[in-house]
Length: 145
Image (cartoon, rainbow, N blue to C red; front, top):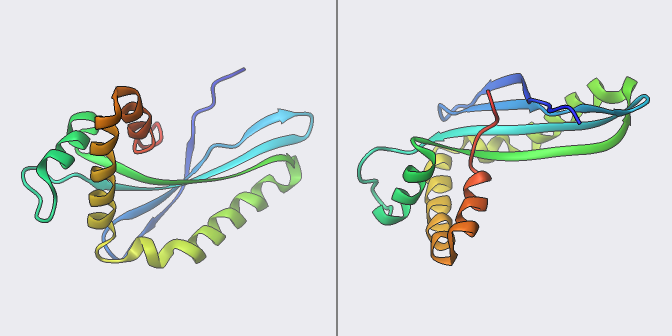
């Protein structure tokens, strides 16, 4: 099967300074049928040095594995969609996501809370073993650009 790279389809600037991106991961299946995938992504910077309210050892795990950025992501997907419905479905998935998640993602403290929660989770996964940590870290990587 041919490798399919995600395509950036829209950016939305949020009031808290973050940017919501929508990535199209759709691909042709067979005949006139498609897999439709739309991934919502928000990149969050990992601050350098000590972070107030963070356990340094926790945040260090993220910095070591991901560098200076982690990503909030949510994939909405549908299978076996007729070709003439693909574009309409992608737009609808984005609209529903914005309606349901914009307030959450736009909160002034969203990035801090997300980073705090994910750094704690990463530390716990590290204690469980390298395979657990690696799988978790994959969920925080952004789409290929």
